[in-house]
Length: 531
Image (cartoon, rainbow, N blue to C red):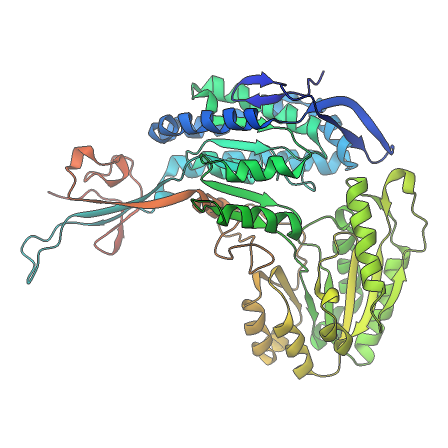
């Protein structure tokens, strides 16, 4: 399958800019052949204006049409077949099985949002019928629901070239909410992005929707990202990546003449607390589970457990020794891009400078020509960890810091000192949980997802999943980027007062023609309202 390296402005191809960049094969350690054209300011303007033009038509589209679009995108992605997996492998260093699974997750979440759209209750319809006889003042007829926010800019993530990229969860949830989407593809996998963008463009045409429903812009330069955020047609932004880049996007969004929401997912350390009961019952299993979780995907998951805490005693000393031995036997792996490997090595160097930190690393040599990163385990005590902020920062790669504390009170202190994080994990027994209620309460203020006797890598795409957390995990802990609740980022409420029934949206009309769940006079109901 031949790549063209052009931008998608709606369903048309564009290559006005002279500046180009290429992808990189991290396993082979060499650049790929196809040049990709950097989007110009004119192309950004065209894509965003086209999205703004498409927004009214999308908003008026039926649920069946929007669901059909999502289903068509899923089918078109599947129809690409092996060339999509081959391209993603060449640009990411990820294996065929991993990427095949990720493609499955991508199309499944598209179909999950299609089902959500068909069911329709996500609009949160609320109706307070008029009370003309109420004293001392009558109540007007009030009807409220969520409507699309407008054009959404999505930034592809480096570590999931399919599931968090061009047709990933951000795009799926924004389209499900009837918003046009402009994606800024990640420069680490431009060919993969192009193939998926072509699938979406074909689905848009097949669904009979406006051309501006979707665009893809190529860019390696940060100024393109900021220009997209600042464009007056942009109404919301979704980003997954580093804290530095995420904060720049958030700041640009909040400093606009018309500030907009920037849903940015950034750094996360995903702490793990190993309690005494767990060590008595299954030290070896926890050692194996943590080693696998930290090294899964060469540590390039936003949910990689980067901090491990426990009260120092003979059991925890034994645990630390076994974990260090497991890391020494763990194999290096190819990272996504030379820039990510460089960032990993810089983070390791930062940790090494802290006094009181010991290092255990893989005994197996890494190959720089294959962009390989080595597993590293650091050990320190609570005093050193509390005194050095750099030990509380994310290390993006196959690394973790084990922190031994002297008492239960000190364990609570380190929990209270944590920055916001996507996940926090407790390994223990039911009795441990009862004895550590204050620890659990502290972690509830720090994390968006609490795990008991599990591992944070592996995020289920479902209605109940929450993938977010207090800053710096995300900019707004109330929202998730995974699961059906992700749609609420791209909707806003509107209240209709006193409107004639037949002029209201279908979801708010008396007879409830869509059959959705609504709140009527404070009670959930699917029945129509009797005149």
